Picture: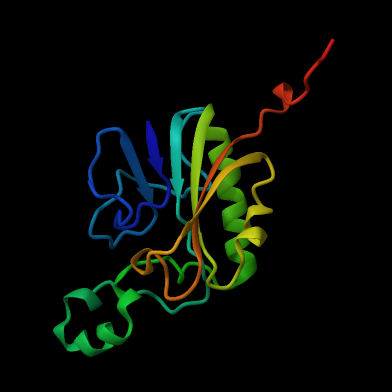
Length: 181
């Protein structure tokens, strides 16, 4: 089973509905409604429920409330032309400052550690809008970084900022020690 822990409008998915994926989000005004309205820092799932979790949190903070009606308003065509990323909901309006965003990411990764199976994978996306990937990865203290994929496609990044997908596994401390005879 797969969890999209920040589903929003499911922009990362080619197929928007998949019977093996649960989509969660807290935002009510989305084009694609989540399977469950839930906070990803406190989910309703049992321990070790998921094989894979995708997490694409907000990469910025302090934005004004998002205008969910902008997409359908033709009068805004010029504004949209100048700000091509304005039609995608990023959740930047949910956190007033850097500290609030960092606390949220820290709590979310703790929750993912609880609900991910021991052999599961967490796929985490980060765009360096205001904070570097290295700064954010310090919050993932109980995880092994397996892979970092640098995104260079300008349609998959925010402006000229660097974006990454990071694949993490749960730290298996009990298996880290090898005994050689």
